[in-house]
Length: 151
Image (tube, rainbow, N blue to C red; front, side, top):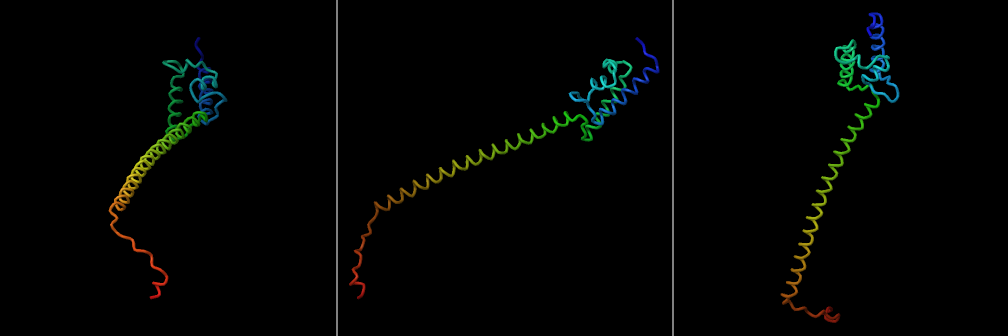
């Protein structure tokens, strides 16, 4: 069914008004900032936005404006913005976890090396004491008597 030029203009105006609302972040609950929501908000069949259909140029304009906003760091869809924020936080936390794991591995390796060195040093001390006891050729003098000290 063909529509009149007046009806088409009226539809385009509704689409542009809905487009502006969506891009300002006025997204209905449970919906996204996408063509499906744009079509439902403008009360236009979604297929009219594709191919050579009458409102394909408005779909391209909507996608271009949405991309421009996203490139500028603005995401009109709160849900999408939350997803982006949570993904970034998730990546940051993964990096922190990786750093913690690396640091923990380094400290575990250091602990292992330190314990091995302490064990080797202890063994060396024990051996030196045993060698000193075996080679003990020094005679111990008797302790002096108190009367001998006064002389």
